[in-house]
Length: 144
Image 1 (cartoon, rainbow, N blue to C red):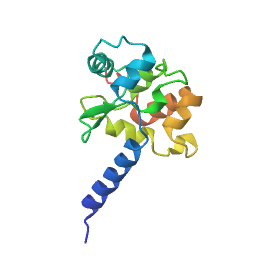
Image 2 (cartoon, rainbow, N blue to C red):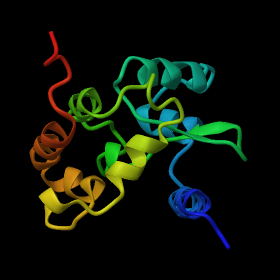
Image 3 (cartoon, one colour):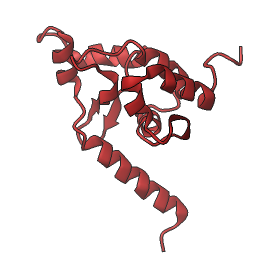
């Protein structure tokens, strides 16, 4: 019989695999959409964006590379300006090195968004998602 912990792990792995199957762009595709020079190092550039909190990437162990969830980009492939505001509210990189905790939150139905996923609503009404994240996780520097 499967323990609750094993069941939870299995569900998480299945959800992660389902999300990776969405074929989110890798560093090369994001760099091409952003107009970054082909001779440059897109992994280094996007690593800087991830570490500075401007962009969210999730680690794909089988590919040994980051994938970039699509909610962050507009129809032209440009990074939405509100992404950095959202990432300031979600658990930090230190708490979520692979990005999966944040992505699970973004792609799971949320009661404050009438059962819609934050990722879906963010594309249409980013402020609603910022408000939901603020209510759930609090202000980033409220302890100060």
